[in-house]
Image (cartoon, rainbow, N blue to C red; front, side, top):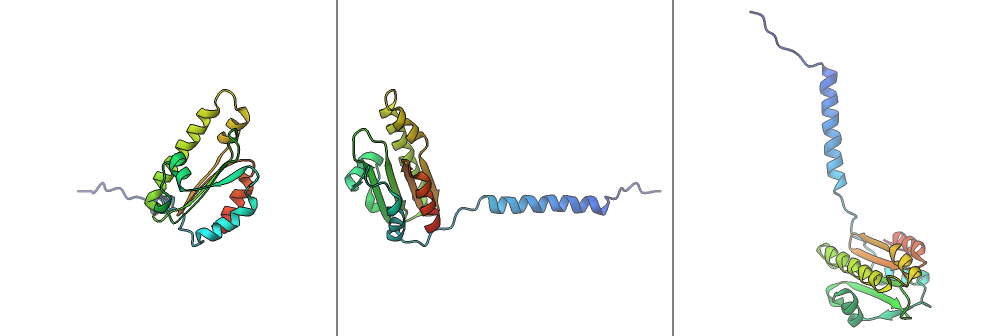
Length: 164
């Protein structure tokens, strides 16, 4: 009796192994998240201060954070909130350093809720404000979340990235 076994050429097996290796490497690295920043909240705040347009923004405290975002300041390692100095302003900045990465979803949802609320407020008459809100900078990276609404988004992003 003769055997009808078919052998797979070695180069075909090598190709299959290579494809499987690429898939494994992709899966390992695609799910990676940014490492937590070792930059203290105070240092990050100091790095951002020079590029924040303080003429259009006022410091806001824990009560305003709760009212606008539904967040409790004491739940986080640090919070900086700056709100428009005029009722017609849309400029805003929120920087949050998380105590735990599991807080990121809550903070992100609060940011998105605030943007939606502001867009609804300016709908129909605040074209400049609406454009500014639509081009908001949102960064969720490691243990930091940042929202910037204003003309200085690029400078703020650069300062954040350089100090992360």
